[in-house]
Amino acid sequence: MHDESDVAQARVFHQLLSAEADSLTSALRATATRRGTATTEGRRLERDLREVHRCLDRLRDNFPELDDQSTAHAHSRIVRP
Image 1 (cartoon, rainbow, N blue to C red):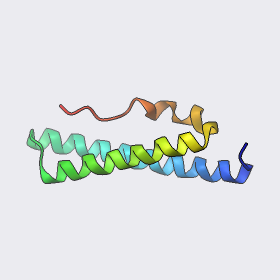
Image 2 (tube, rainbow, N blue to C red):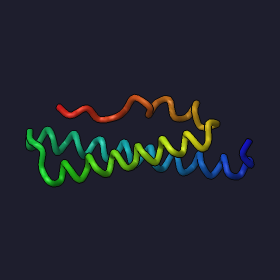
Image 3 (tube, helix red, strand yellow):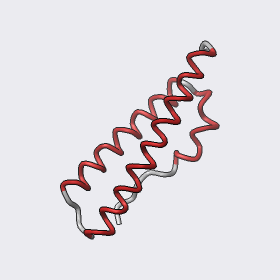
Image 4 (cartoon, rainbow, N blue to C red):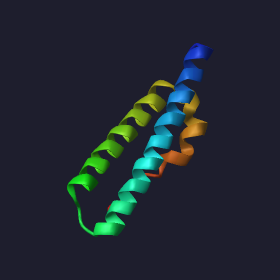
């Protein structure tokens, strides 16, 4: 069991990472729509999005209390068009 302040901090960090994942997803979709092919920018966005998802996964692994909050983002990973 984690200290309540640790869980609260993890929740805030989860919210920030989730917002970043949403932002990167939107930018990646716009890049794919605009160009139709993988670009340097698109590959960078994909790399950054993978890193954010990796951080979210580790955060959920370390703080299972976040499970309810993370359900919405568990299936939001990008599938390349």
